[in-house]
Image (cartoon, rainbow, N blue to C red; front, side, top):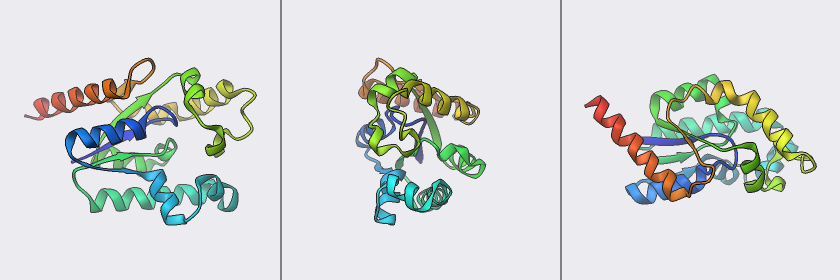
Length: 174
């Protein structure tokens, strides 16, 4: 079984995913970290040197490799992975996706702007830029039925909610 954490940047995907993996005894992989390892450079360097399109292609390759070569895996995905129809289909059909959400204000509080190429230059009006990106991706994020808002709850509490979702899912499938 592969469980994927999807959602916008700074919603807790990596922290929650690693805690969930620990709790279930599963392997944990962050797609962004794997892209950095494969490319040998940071994500901001990929964006500035090769462009977003190149990064998105790498993101799809990494996702396909992970899904088809693993089991018992918790996957933390990049916030924009859902832009691709192909990636959304893979996540919905080959994994149990859980959408983590947070308010623009909370995301702004959590995010490291230097590491986020899509927020570059928005330090003056971060909530506006975050809101614009969230709005542009809303139609993609809304395609996932299991959703947890991570505002004002601990990563451990999010893990407990995910475990409840998994329990309910397996009871329904019987």
